[in-house]
Image (cartoon, rainbow, N blue to C red; front, side, top):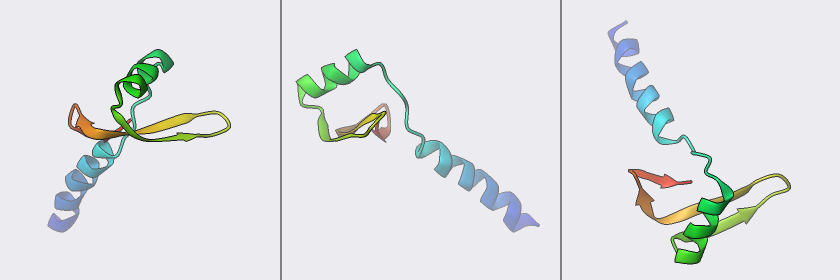
Length: 61
């Protein structure tokens, strides 16, 4: 039972760190123009970018 209570908070922290934040397109364009993105993936309904350096403690946006 103690193991479960120890694992649940760790899982919550991991899930929270993996959360991707949606940003407005104009902010995305600014990051792109500034060269802050290492990779950009364009899908049929989404555009996703990966930062070169962590932003606000999160590596992806």
